[in-house]
Image 1 (cartoon, rainbow, N blue to C red):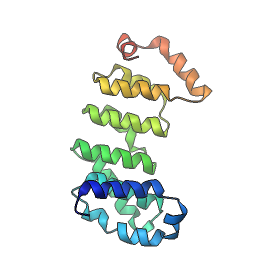
Image 2: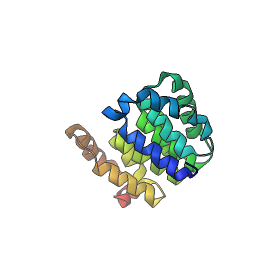
Image 3: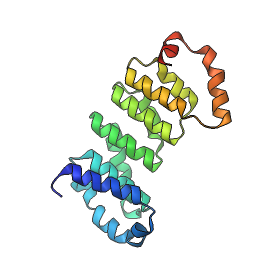
Image 4: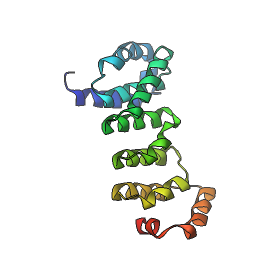
Amino acid sequence: DEDAEVRQSAARALALRVGTTALVLRRQEVIDALSPRLDQEADNAAVQAELCVVLEGLEDEGSAVRRRQLVQQLLESEDVNQINAGIRAAQQMGYPQVRAHLRHPHPAVREAALRSLAEQGGTPEEFIAVLADPDPDVVEAGVEALGRIAGDRQRQELVAALPGLPLKAWEGL
C-alpha cells in the first residue's frame, strides 16, 4: 500500500498473528514477501520494527543478521521515533538493549524503555529509580510498572526498598 500507516498496521497485525496456524502454514510465503521489505521501508522505522518482529517470530534464519542490525540501528539512532520503534521491537524480540535507554536524555525514550521493561519483567529497583525522574510521564510509567509487579518475591523487594526512598521518589508515588 502507498500509505505508511496502513503498512505499519498490516505489519503489526501480522506480528500479533505469529504462531497462529494460518501464519505457520504460510510461513515461507510470508517470509518471502516480508524479507525484501526490510530495506524497502528504510524511511519508516515503525514498519521496519514490526517487520523485524514478524520475521523473528517466524524464525527466519535468512534475515536474522539483518534484523539484528536494523534493531540495533534503530536503538542507536538520534531520532526519538526510531529509538522508540527499536525499543518496541527489541522488547518483543527479547533483546536486552532496552535497559540502557532508561538513562536516555529524552523523556519519551525513557518512558518507552520503562513501559517495555514493565512488559518483559523489569525489576522493582528499575521502576523505583524512575520515580525521581523530572518528567511526569516517566514517573507515571514507573508507578504503573510498580503496580504491575506480581509475585511475592518482587513485592517483598519493593516493600523493603520503600523506607530508603528519597523524598523526590515519594512525590512520584
